[in-house]
Image (cartoon, rainbow, N blue to C red; front, side, top):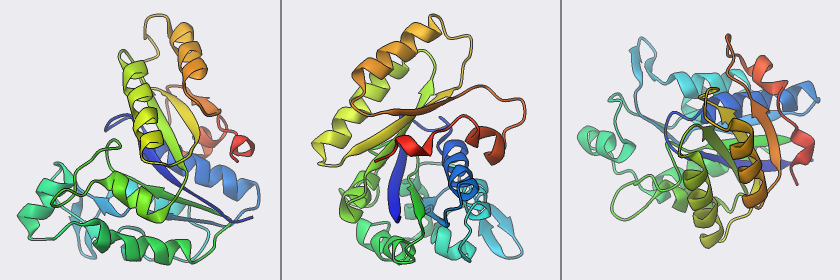
Length: 226
C-alpha cells in the first residue's frame, strides 16, 4: 500500500492538524509507514534552530520515516497572518511551483500513508493568482476534508466539497471535528452533512480534554478511505 492525500479544512482553526496527526497515528498503529508535509506555515516561533511551527512539529512527530523539519515544512513564516501576506512581508515568492518540488520529494519517499496539509481553507491565496488548492491539483492528490462542526459548518462544508469537485479532485473522505459540542441540533447537523457530502465520514472527533494524536486516532477509521 502507498496512499497519499491532501488534507484541507472548511476554515482556519477547525482542527486540520489535530485530525491529520490522528490519521497518521492511526496509520502507524496499523503498521503502516508514514510521512507528512506542511508546505507553508505562518505563525512560527523563533527558536535556536530557526522558525518552527507547532502544526508542522505535530506532523513531524507522527512521521515514521526519518524526516527533517525543513523537509516537512519548507516555508516557515513568523507572522500569524495569511500565508501570502506573511510571505510578501518576508520577501518570499510563494507560488505553487516553489512548493511542488519539496512536496513531491516527500511523496517520492513512498510511505504507506502520506498526508500533505494545507493552510486554512481550500482557497487560501499564494502569490499572484495562485491558490493553495492549485498545489493539491498539481500534485493530483485525493482530498480529506476536516469539517469544524459549529454553527454555519454545513454551508462551509458543502461549498468546499463543491470547489474540490470543480477543481477535478476526488473527495476521499471527511472528518467531523466537534469544535462546539453545544451546537444546536448537533446530531441533525451531522446527519445533514453525511447525506450531502459525497464521501464517507472517516469519524467524529469529540471535544477532547486532552488533545493527542493517540486520542484522536481512536475516533477515526482509516479503512473507509479508498
